[in-house]
Image (cartoon, rainbow, N blue to C red; front, side, top):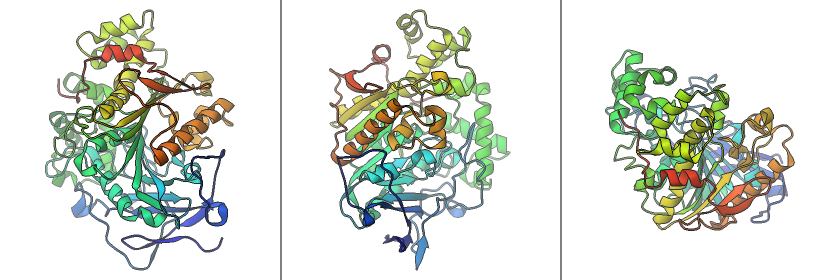
Length: 513
């Protein structure tokens, strides 16, 4: 096919390219004939807002300016400045500042009314990029979805609380991207009235925030949130973090002063501050133990409250977590199985609900090793309980929630990773051949991983298309949950010990001690 696809957006013409379809197995829920029957139209690096530099540094995203002629849209946009400890794309710190871009993969730009999935990447609110091979959209697009992947400001650029700048600029970026989708997605074959916003980890935290934000209302119809994090902070704590960041840079904590700092130097300072967080435990408490300094701020304006309390209008929501969320961090730190009793005690004191939480964990897990206790409370406080609470809050607000837990363990490293944080991402995208997926799932992946991938991907496609992933909705009484494993089943929520321990304890923003 010699003629590449061209689409007219509201700002100007973009030219993408045709790329091969990829169908790991057949999908029956939604099938469309593509041009030539075998190719997808892919557009990369489309600007949805002006570069946030110069006078626009730390400002709300500004609408993109129109252009004449045809812009090539065949390369991913530049990587947003990244922070650590393991920043994605950290070696790609070019001077290209056109960070606010998105990518579109469509099975047929000439179609009408295809369901749309808008992907918000994870990365601890401090790193990540839409172009990660883990997020290869071709399997989902081959099943009939128009897939949009969004780059947004992370770290201090997106989340540092600055005098003279709006809070949570990353969420404002995401809303700007959703407005772009509303204006333009029909020109790529998508239905602007059938938009599903989806994310994992920090991306799921972004989805949760969008559910609670009035400016995002009406921009999407459904939501997918995998491993919703519970790390938000108060303005008082965020102000101290920014002050410490400015101190590292030898300046003052204002937007005007930090705008003089090169963006990649600012990102590097966040990495330095993350490494120094243990020195701030006495004052910063849970934030210092979380390992991430720049997190969303419950500022009362951009983010009116924690999503679990501020969510007042429910949607169709597919939400879930992995069984062994914290295991990834134990293994990556080299500490899995080696945590001491004192470390477990500190973790329980920091993150278990009070009063009574630390004792409740020890009673619920008799005979558990210090590492098992630490991983249990880490999994619950950081991801599992926030995910469960989002399902509950959405249902209470009149929405329909569907809950899942991934229980299939990763076979790599002798199975030590378990069903760890992030394992669900390549399974949902069908990107089992991506480098990261091969490290955890093996090359080739075992048949049970292929089967779970097929089930989860079909659930995404069916949910984005119809609002029903294929299992019963969650309600507070029956608590029906799809457990994805070598033999998947729908059962009562499997993490009952955690549910009982946290009952009656609200999820609160991190604050000063």
